[in-house]
Length: 184
Image (cartoon, rainbow, N blue to C red; front, top):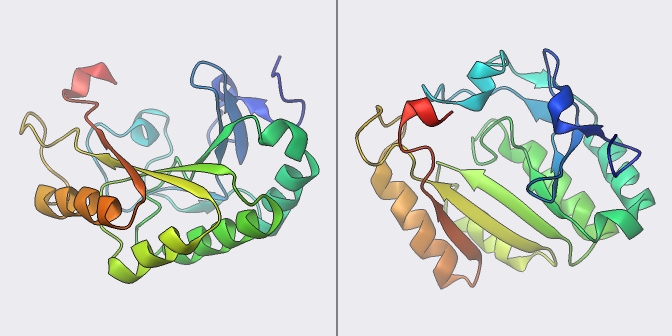
């Protein structure tokens, strides 16, 4: 049973993930208005979950933001891991990310938001992220940087993303897992 009565536990994934799911082990609430990613990383958990590259709308952004704001007393105690089933900086996903973060800023200012990416969104996007009243952390995926699995996107722009986040005062973290495909 989920600690949060309005979300499904992460272990309840069927064909598509629920738009809100709670990962008790990591202490974060996963917020996913869409799933499906165009990158096609060979070790992607989405592929092993059967989701793959197919883009699917899971819930309207406004509905998710309202649900989170209605439960602000619980949500404020958690970190929101946003768009876990796609790369949030994928150019085709950026408009959805913007709508979601603007909604969170309006309804839950100061909320901790986690983004995991292997793409650099560009300087203007980082400036915009830095201007938000949210506490944004950018996890930069470098799991394929060792060469043990094929790099899906170039490593240099991801290292630049770390530096550019730092320069703007955005919290950024190197995400080094998975280093080998078998870990997933």
